[in-house]
Length: 132
Image (cartoon, rainbow, N blue to C red; front, side, top):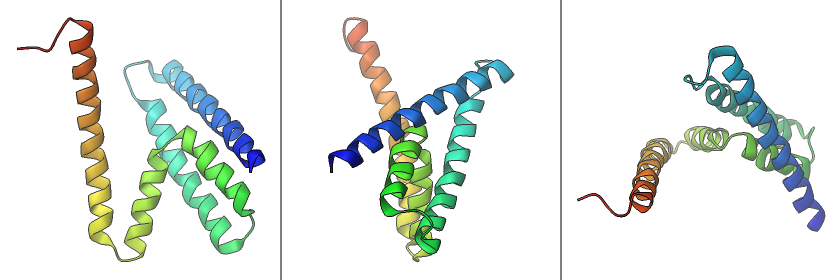
């Protein structure tokens, strides 16, 4: 059990480092004002998640623990957008269209709201109080 945790942590570290390297490369290419790094990471992560999951699930070419390490550890750190996209597609494939749409819309709207609230709270705490 401990061994899988070590592999997950190592894969997570690798995913984090690759995400950072991708962002740095994108900044060098288009500058810091464009989210190219995030776009590349999210779309590449989605593609890799779908590819690896399908090969592991339907071809059994990847051991279940290796799949866990790659999808959860590496891609989980590389991008969480890939997991959101995969879960939504999986719901659609099972005929759960309402759940898939609620998942996509709900997480995006809630995510935006949480970012805005976090920024609001940080601003309030660092400037001496809530705005009136």
